[in-house]
Length: 331
Image 1 (cartoon, rainbow, N blue to C red):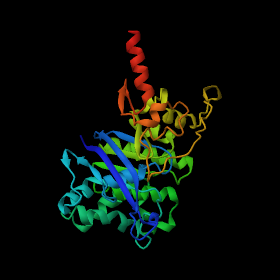
Image 2: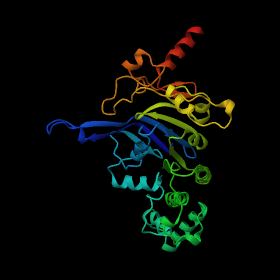
Image 3: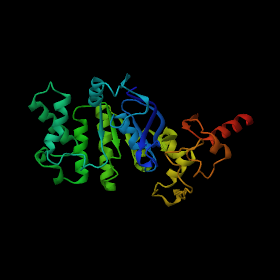
Image 4: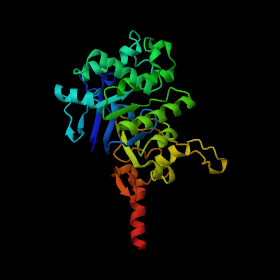
């Protein structure tokens, strides 16, 4: 298994919530027990509303945000974020593409220098000429002419800057690519180009990709499997085809109903979610989605449902347990 994340938790201390100097600050639970396995050459899409913990999760996997608990295994080797040698191996094997393509590039460096820089750290065995050659080849591969290598990031469009970011991430040939909403700031036509570019590079390099987005339409196009998050917890996980065809969890159903469909006869009336979000500093004992779920039962507010497999879907919902029991009674 190229990447395995087990029972990941991330929390933050909210110092501004202290009412008195001697009182304890509140704790924000950002990620609550996320687990998944990802093979080489496969893509896991992570979707959910803004603030559901998607970006926090992959930043924690990359070591940019500390894990409160849980384990990360990279290429069957446990990652120790406190060990310098382990982190060096992690950086060489796992790279990240950020949401804002322009802000993620150093404005004082040419794009040649930007793409050569990772090779300086990860490939000390290469000569400077070899690094420049490799950088130019990668820029050409992502659609940036080598003749423009002496330009600065501000001289390129947002889509071109994202291509440069992809080149920088992949020039050292990592095995895992973490994408933090890499197309959300781009025009729709450019989004399709960047997504198709990532798919082509994945086939060539055998990349394992974690693709974070809030747009289910984009995620289902690039992903082999989709994980739906809400308030930092997993609501449902299934193959992209199965999730689109028959979502099991009410939250996944609501997300899918909001995806635009070209065919008017196939359109679904969007499900408007009502109710209030629970506080991340005081999570309820029951299902995190119960306060907004139109199908919530009394026990949904009392205890948290486990993530169980229902056919090809893994979902945390008591409705699935009740339907499984009812089906077994019929048979």
